[in-house]
Length: 261
Image 1 (cartoon, rainbow, N blue to C red):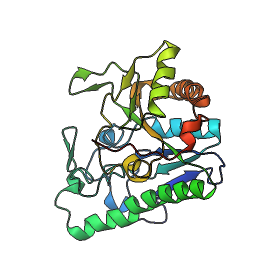
Image 2: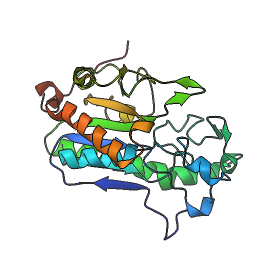
Image 3: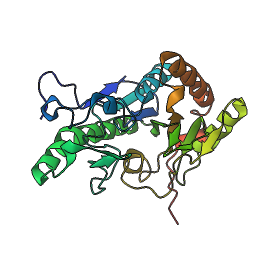
């Protein structure tokens, strides 16, 4: 499926980092294997949010530098296969996304689907698992922070938040982070907005952090705020400053399960 000129399915930054923070970016890339062409889509569609999370990879890289933290970034567009989905989810290989039909995903047989799973999905998830295991082997509890971005509006409805913090039952990282971002005074901060992190299944956080009792949060930054270098630099500073004193909190260094009720 991948040729010699295709990028790797996953990139790991700072694989020897000593800290507990582990950054993941599920929708880092808009790349499509050359063997799949453009999935039948025009170029302008591949530059939209349906293909990747605009600005998320650059923000992840900046945060990785700020904290000298390991970061795992996906190598291919979620239009090929979404690494932040349960494989039983029909949107894992989307036939339609935000009203756009994906011709190259229509009528895929089982072999073609399995090829995408084995070539792109599993290497990314296995890389996350390896880095989690490495942190644990070093005697620390991983702190998993997933970086995403969202559109300023959806189906014509404006989304007023500058940033959202998504979480399920474990409050150890998200609640202090929400408080720190709100204390800044400049931002409208969403608590489980514009999406909810409650009772979700199959995503990277739900696979690698929640069942193990590791502290975690998922960030959603509005795309128009991080679609250029200046915006990325600003939000890397905003988030870095908010996280700086939170990551050493004693309760983040423990394993604690928060069962769904």
